[in-house]
Image (cartoon, rainbow, N blue to C red; front, side):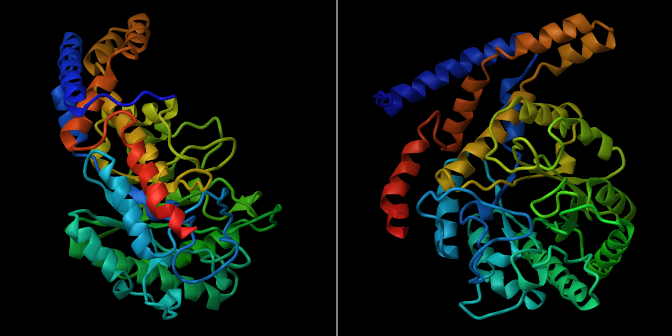
Length: 430
């Protein structure tokens, strides 16, 4: 049996004591722990709405998501409408320290049951989302939805050989950029509108070049309208492969890197979209040597190209360290991208976001001066020794104190509100 948590006053006092001792220990390493927490408080993570309802959206379609996407599991209580989804997001946000954002897909528009096809959607379909975000003082990000639609049934959209189908998806992308700009203007913070398409082929193609030429032309047409970057920022996202596009992906990493460099868009690096031996942490300084900004979708790949709930892995910490060591955070927009219906969906948001924030705190608390000094002297023995010894520093004490000061649960205390929501709310949805 799990013992009950200690009473709040005693627990809070213990957290304060551990925090003071931890600060002293970090000071011996030349690290200002209070400053690290202050820096962490400036980081906003964009929570992806589609974790809450298994990427179904509110268009009323049934069946497969398509586009090489699949959600596994049948945990009870998925959100069935926007009000339920917002309620679940509110609970998750209340259990995560800091002030964050929410990332929407175009398929989450609310038109009161009225059918509006994707080439004709507008900001009016997201009016309630905008009001909700404004009431909480947070920003919104956005994504066109190039899947789960009859005109994407064959796995091709912006690279489709049929000009009429390409035009439909170009018009959809144009509409989405305008919606993103409406988000940014209403909420006072730029919306990142990220373009991902499923286009590819299951087996070996003969012509790889022509679909990429069509994609480049479609993207240029989609982005032809000038939009103030203070309201909307465009991003493009590559992928390694998908279900039904195992042999060829039109919008590969190399394609979009070239497009972003030549067109001045953000490049989205999704940490679940690479070969198992590729490390995204090594790509950050490489691409940011040429691009002003990027979008980083944090996911957890298992085996090949998958999107699992983010956990505090060495890979995640390495990404956070690279962002902090290189002073890159101000040029990187952070978002989550995973979907798991085998566990409580709200818990997935909480676990994933807290894991990313813990990784960033670990990076902010790293004794970078010691490590850089050893490296500059060519003393790689000391560098390795310091790196290993630093792993034993009391990051958890600093994290608990930050959660306490932010009014967020410490330790495992976040789980009981999730369980209560499960009993009182989710069970009634099933």
